[in-house]
Image (cartoon, rainbow, N blue to C red; front, side):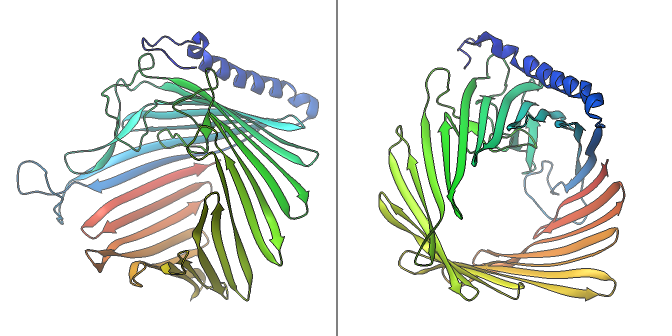
Length: 439
């Protein structure tokens, strides 16, 4: 199911697909509402509306055109404002969900989905519409999100997810119809325009997941990817696991792979897992991998990974914790050479009537020198919550202050107000004010 070079779909109904699915979701909602009186259930509505304002400084310069990021105490500010609505209506055993956002550049997305429990299995149908965005670097050396002309709200994808359990066998099937050319909002898009007729290309893919427990504690799972994989193809501000292949589609050919995993195995008290991946169309047709952990040395847990075809040792790691306050993890190579280590510590603080916590963590490289250190303090009491975090990282072969951030929040049910500020080594990076209403 892909568009031809002249923009005419080989399957012409793809142009009307978004309307068919939207009508189907609405029809499902009406049928559920009609059965409301019979079952005596009431309509339940929940959701959240938020309005966020982001402020960033414009670099100062002594010349006519901004060219360098020069820290200055007095400078101009650039603003970003975004409004987001997340709405859910529950009627009997069905749910209708809407997620939408709009910012200074205009509408971002409209995500519609409907869910219904049919007894033996559950069905969830999603329809995504979005405006194509891209990430660019402006003349002030800021990363910015801009709309790709003509900036129309476009149909992007449909996801039909069916899941359930039958006689101990659980299943989940995700069928996707997706525009594989839709621009990523987190990358630069080279073409200057993106239109529905000339640019979009729809492919179909499916991911089937099966799992069962043949023996207590042992789980066997199977994941079959047909012209799809577990990655994501996001739109501005929204993403989900699962995406269709850009090179193949179920309609005119299929590239598939299978992963069979067994977990919960144990030999002489040593727990381990095995995974077999079959990829007939890849360079590596068969790959058997596995790993295990050993946690009977007090609070120390040792784990490792390996591959049998070909025979490779991935490395080892061991971790331990002390009184649920101090934890550490050490990674070793296959030759037991030191690779990296991380340490984290949490300590509760007595702030009179407030609940406080101090958190610190550090990451060490293979040279045993710290590559990053973070320190944080948080406190909360009733409607108030706040925190201060300091980040230190290795820059130019020395540890330097990399960030200082603080946040303050107040909750006046159903309203939540939060304010956060992030400073970097060269000064203010970003300040944000968020007001949300939960209903």
